[in-house]
Image (cartoon, rainbow, N blue to C red; front, side, top):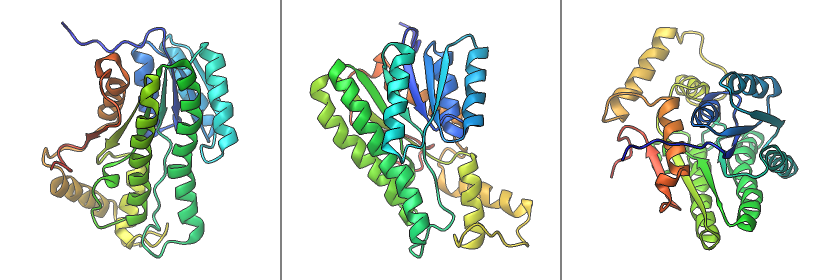
Length: 273
């Protein structure tokens, strides 16, 4: 029997869908037949993703949402339910990294990262599960990171925030299982997104903030990137947004009906044990 991931007739909510992995995930679910509702802080980016999904012949909707604000998340879920007449899958792809992320990070920057990565995930799980448990059906997928599984010696507080995402996901999965609701996480490896551009900047200045030394050339940045791939990934190639999107679609599909509380790591072997 062939494997065809089909979300026709399903409604999928994706946060952080204005760019990067969130956008890749939203577009793939639409390509698999889903009607997709989007949450994003940047209105212009979110509406652009809506237009691209509609150009595919799929339905799409959008609500501005800062996942750090619980009232925003509640409104987003309510809007998604009204849009689709129900809600089958939630993917929380909203997340940030910090270029100040050493143990000397400022309180303001640390709280910004926790507000989005940790509290944002908590709000999605809290409000999303309340709806899905009442229906006794549904899937939630959090986007964590290999940084939450193995601390590579840099950005320890970012790693801690993603480890918390994984722990929250597994706890929510146990609570949701009696209601027939599955909760899993996808942990991306190294992908050349805007977030990784920030990480490359941080590597260039010792993670001391946004100021990049003037002597850091484009060639220097590319050499840093290639060294990360060469030294960290056994398969020798970076991952892509499509790799993460397909993993997310699989874990939310009926093909993964017996899987919950798991972290699906997509990293080219970076964290193999």
